[in-house]
Image (cartoon, rainbow, N blue to C red; front, side, top):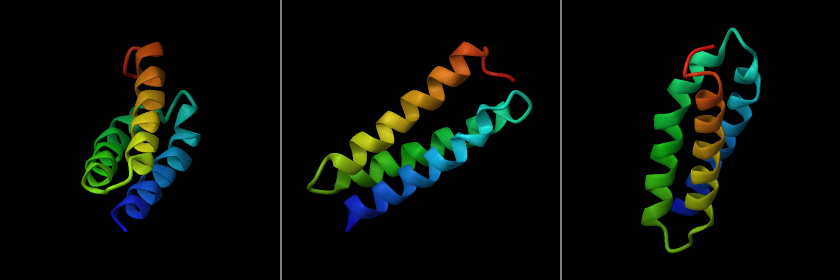
Length: 73
């Protein structure tokens, strides 16, 4: 059950991160990082690792996007 919750949190963060690729709303990616981290933490409590790994993948994608733009736009 925790793995499913982790997957859902990661999927929501990924879907929300797609429009945040636009230059003006890029700062909102900072709000998604802790939420995806929460999903990874919930996935860590599960017996399966797939939800945690998916959330970590989403965190890496958001972090790369923020690193490319210097954390702002």
